[in-house]
Image: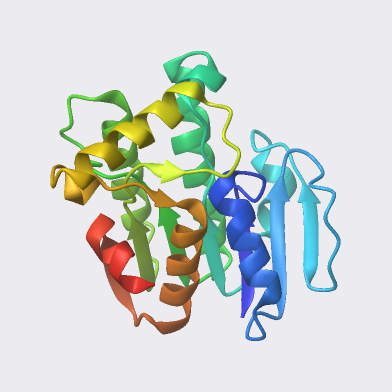
Length: 213
């Protein structure tokens, strides 16, 4: 398997990168990043790119499978337009380039409750991204809609509070479908699906992800 990965410096992406590098069925891993991850490995190819300059990198997006884990928060982005550019536009443009170059499989990290009709900005943005990549015609498409993610060493105070609150409610038997999962568990599920799922479109809700690994 020749794998492509965007979002390799993020929480889920970094966990997935380590799994890919350690898997004997993966021959090459090409990551596309904005800053040097300071990682070396015989299988690893690092491409430092400007996602806004598609003409400079689109010819490099060649392989068997694309793992799309890119994303940011509204707080880090500063405004909705900036978050949309990272979470929607960059991922779509990269998927578009991959499909143009013959990549047959896309695994996309979306979000629980993603929907074109959602009244909430984040869920609607993810819903629009899902619909856009569907139209690209990947022979094998896997969309992961994880619940809240537990990131190792997270410095996001509200994220830590939210995860603890949902965990507490889960113990009371409430919001079971929203139970938080570690990013490494999501990464494991993605690699498992990449190696075992057949052609077609697969939507993986939180319960599906939890049952994979």
